[in-house]
Length: 260
Length: 297
Image 1: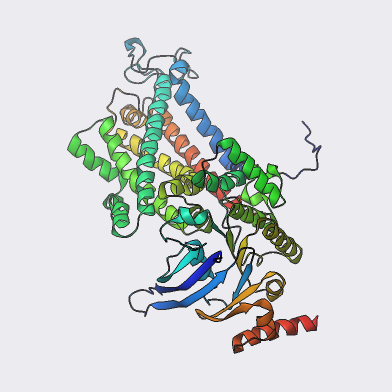
Image 2: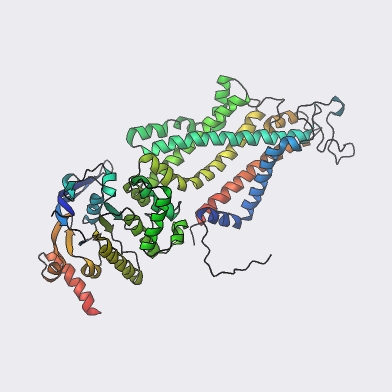
């Protein structure tokens, strides 16, 4: 059986022009290869600027990779075809606040992917929006709300609802827990784990919080300066880290735990 | 009436409502709004309110003083001008012409400007630059001067001056729209919509436009005050509306000849222009600060 998602040698080169007189900065993501099975959770960890977000954007199709290919269920994904991709791979943005349009209601925001990608009638779409809102633990009434009326945790839930509404097979989340306070964070983590169990989603997320990573992920990808330093099962990486960088990360995490 | 809250519900106003709540805080802005509504009412109901036809000349009632003067009569509340036309009626029709045309001009300029700005904002590279800077040369010259140039080429007349002012108003709409669209396209929610599979046209109308309306309202009020001043200035210079027609600027220049005998014939149109521009500016200013403050909570 082929894996749900397989990424083969995907690389990305980004050149930032710094005006006429400065040398342009260059960011290179060296070829990344990994596979993800259905129902599996993969965490991407690494320092800032190590290419985690770029990798996430490459997966959902927001950026075009320089080389390599991504296969979904053995089928190659085309880069200019967002429609093909967004039915199956959905993204939860890092800042849920900015990923919601302030000028329209949440119902309209959630309706948009349905309107663009499905042939459902308005009544069916309405039904689906309400159903998805309930799924993430909100009320159908919230569809008449605007962005600024919600708390951060609720916004995060809406962002997840938006990702879920098309029944995708994979969700890619860029630091979904970063801006949340501990209680809301645990709620969101539990919500995602429950959804994953119920729907069999593949879940890829970026996080700096090693506690959560250890708690929910099956596999880990460690990145540093555009390179994949290490990848493997969570247990293996936490107990027998191979590279120096991973070792340091794990040590600092354990030092923090033993202090408490 | 005493207002009390029966339910322990939080109050969550929509963006539009929040703007109105902020707007209401400023007394000056509210005064401006009432004044503006008064002028709008005058514009709409003008023909019903005016006691006389603005063009009818009454040779028996030349330069009558206003009603409160010893020699005045109640037939003509503000008196008559040098050709025996009722000043009140002319004033009402004047407001109607000046404000009505200004609103029309701003509307047309906004439509064209926003369309061009959106096009420039959604495209990239040289094409965007060309659309953006197409009308920039107009911005170098003051509006009134452009109007005079166009009028010099096409001849005097209200319609020609309307063309001129519309043309002069367009570039600022193009620029602000383009900058706004550019900023907006960088935001995460536009990216999110794009990942939903939204095309460019869908993105503009559904992701960008709902947030642009407020900017348009503010820009529109600014343009409106410029349009009012320009229309009446061209009328005053005899380049725009031509004398018999009741237009505030034209009335001013006509009244100038008899200013010593009947000061009211220049004071009234002058006051009307002043109040009109004042009200538009107050509303615009109030709206701008309301929009700035509405997310500060």
